[in-house]
Image (cartoon, rainbow, N blue to C red; front, side):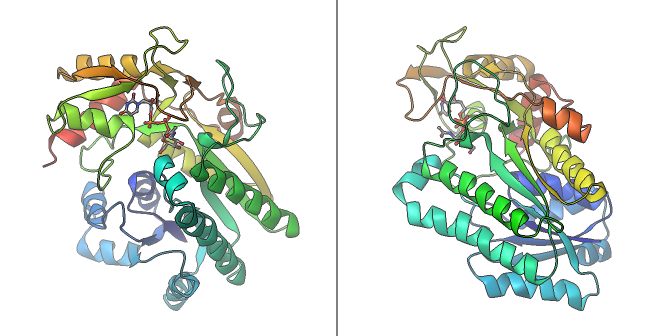
Length: 346
Ligand code: UD1
């Protein structure tokens, strides 16, 4: 069976592609390579001990962008020509910088929203109606100190979040128009960090990273002098913000479980939180990283970052009960695996 993975060379896309290949699926991977590189596919292939033949048979890479609908159609056609039509789509492709999204809203609406619209139209045209969508916890309206449930109010405060919540609406509309056909999972991610246990693949953002974990890795490698912690006056145990960090392999497994669940079930649309349900402060994360890896992470406090919330933690009980999925890895594992990957990188 063939699966299309959009954004398949990015952080979450590549780790999920690895698991899909391990399970024996043939992949059609689309990526524009603006924030990743197709070199990761060779590494995945080496982790899986693929021969050159396996690689060319199972991994079909297409460089391009979802804004171009005829390009997407070409990818679907190419699978049909090989007699292995695409039967499901894992849709990771998208832009994700909050700051940039507010500065360049058209760019974000075009890439994230129009890109998804083009993808859905092509899927429908090809009678492919199973979709796993990369949504985000960022779509929730902020709440104080309570774990977030899927039924919480939606209320993003930046353009990036708006594009994700609007895409969810679009997916609901698609489902409603043909309720007997679509199978859709909106997976709302909390904070994925870490890397594959092999140390061969991990998060490799191009340009200057904004998220905490790639910055910790840079400081640990002495590529950046100091980490700036955004505020130590929050109403939390140590004054720094609390997040729900989840090991990238647990997150990838969550996608596989959601796909297997949809495969077995009747047509439906479902939204699920993928997090561990455990909160860790910024300071707690830094201290754990230092301890398990025996490295120094110099930091200083600076003012709060606009748009931050003090406590963002998942209530993951719905995903756990519906999917039978359970995150397995601790914050120590996330720090160890992330460092194993980063320290060998140039
Ligand atoms: C951020 C985005 C979110 C997006 C997610 C994935 C914001 C407000 N939120 O989530 O919409 O879905 O990335 O791309 O941008 N921190 C520091 N110093 C740093 C960087 C981060 O102290 O240099 C702190 C932040 O204040 C936060 C925590 O580390 O408390 C995690 O930050 P980050 O990795 O950017 O993730 P989120 O803010 O949770």
